[in-house]
Each structure stands twice: as C-alpha cells, then as structure tokens.
Image 1 (cartoon, rainbow, N blue to C red):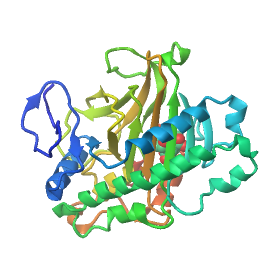
Image 2 (cartoon, helix red, strand yellow; image 1 turned 90 degrees about the vertical axis):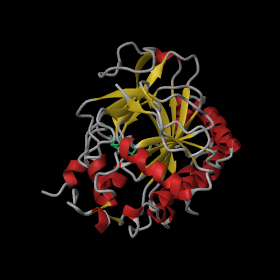
Image 3 (cartoon, rainbow, N blue to C red; image 1 turned 60 degrees about the vertical axis):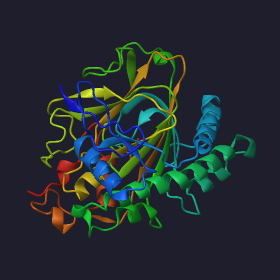
Length: 358
Ligand code: GA4
C-alpha cells in the first residue's frame, strides 16, 4: 500500500515523497502563510478527514491542569462520581455510550463546551455537597474550552479561505455563535486492557497487536469539527480508505469499502483534529467524516483524552455553498434535526445517508 506522506515537521511544506507506511498529515498552525496552511488542511480533510496540529497555541499547562483534575475526579469512588449526575446531557458516564445499548470500556465526563457564561451543569451541581463538587475540574475545563474553541474556530476560518468555500457561511462563526452547542468530553480508559478478555475489535487491528479490548467502538462524530488531546497512552485508531484522495464526494463516513485501521501515535503536546458529519455535509461530501475508535492497550497507565466537539446553535441550517452544488448530495437540515437522528441510532450507524437527496 503506497500512501503519500504528509509529515510536516515544522513548516507547511507540500507533501513531496511517497511512503509505504502511513504518516498522517501534520499541520503547523504557527505558519505565517495562511493560504498555504489552508490548502494543506483542506487536502488533509479531503484525504483522511483527520490531521495532527502542532504549534497550536494551547498552553501545555491548560492541558495538563485539566488532565490532572480529571484524573483526581476519576480516582474517586463510583458513588462519589455518580453524584455529578448522569450524562444527560452533562455528567458522568461509565461503560454506557449514548442511549441505545452501546458499551465501551470507558469512563467519561460530558461538560458544556459552548463557552457561554451560564452553564447548564451549574444547577445540577448545586445539589452536590461542596466538598464533593469537582469545582477545580470545572474551572480547568472552562479555561481549556476557552482556548481550544479558539483553535477550532481558527482551523474552520482557515478552511473557508479556500476558493471553493469562499462565500460559504463562516464556519468558525458557527462555533463562536452565542448558543453554540459544543461539548467537552473527558475520557478515561482503564490500564492493562481493563482486565477484559474478549472485547476485541472485529476488524483488523493496528498498533503492533498489543491492543486487548474495545474502549470506544467505531463511529463518526456528528458535529462540525473535533479537537482531541490525549496523554501519552495510545489506543486511538482511524479508518483510512484505500481510495483516500480520490475525492469522489460520495462517502457517508461509513466503514464500508476497502481501507485499514491505522494507529494514531500519542503525542501529548499535539492536538488531533477530525472532520465531523456536519462538515462533510457542508462540503457536499468533499471532506471525509472519519471513522475512528479506541482500543485498549496493555499499557500499565490509563489513557486519558479530552475531546472538544464544535457544534453550531441547534437551529443552524446545514447546507453547502453554491460553488459546491455541482450535484447537491444532501438536503438542507438543521443541527437539531441531525442531532435527533444521531441520538436515536447506535454508535456505529452511519446517519448522513438519511439526509441524502433522492
Ligand atoms: C460520538 C461523538 C461524541 O462523543 C458524542 C457521542 C454520543 C454520546 O456518547 O452520547 C453518541 C455518539 C457521539 C454518536 C451516536 C450516538 C450519540 C452516542 C451514540 C450512540 C457525545 C456525540 O455527540 O455523538
């Protein structure tokens, strides 16, 4: 399998060499040439729907503080953690993912990522005795959301610099908007494979064969864009289509077709970005909403990750700009409609096809 290498050590150089091992694209966000960066991001979104970001401007302190506070929270007893309430929509979850029976070897916290002044979880937390309230965690999460949302918006602004998307509604503006529906998810995956024996991913495995169970099953993210950071424990895998780069604009983010799982090497200093379903729809199928999953590893340390899911206000109409309407793939729909469809289905189900034009 020959795949173009897009490693960008520190400058946004266009890819030059071919490599037999897959190297996912690396984008240097500090590069002064914004149009070159824009082109590289667009290329990465078309080929993989996934890329690494370095020199992103999120202070390492903000990340480590959030991870430390999260670790403190996840180290509490089960009943203590449950006091923050179920993740409906914000709260603590354990093994259950969504509302339709999906399970994973994961503990998590869902928090408001809108950056708004009033957070819906405040009220819920009022009933928790002060010494049980994860106040430090919440303030670390707020500080992190503030900066990571800026990065998500900057990436979306860079995407709209490309010719085809000029004239599109501001993508960054969707996430900046008052009432945006962004969320923050903090995941904690058990060490040593969680002690589970038979929860192996069905498809072929990557990562040297030391993965032992499934932390979070394969899926695409329904929002516009996801920005992820993790500690130094691996486990994230992305699905790379064999035809990556063909740009047939026909994908539904489905795991159908040929391709392979590729392990994403952990890098606590970097951010990973993936295209969500809404961005695939806005680009008329040109960008790929990447399927991904988390496998447990034999590491003696738990994996922790923090995902910011950038979403617009619920009533935002999702449609692609005229320039991309050669043959519109999807009918216009609101984020609210799409979210309802998403939450009524299973984790691994593809959903964009429900919004295809006949
Ligand atoms: C995947 C991306 C985000 O983690 C998430 C997930 C959500 C949940 O865990 O409640 C969903 C999943 C995610 C997609 C399908 C539905 C909804 C679980 C599930 C079965 C918070 C999101 O927005 O969509």
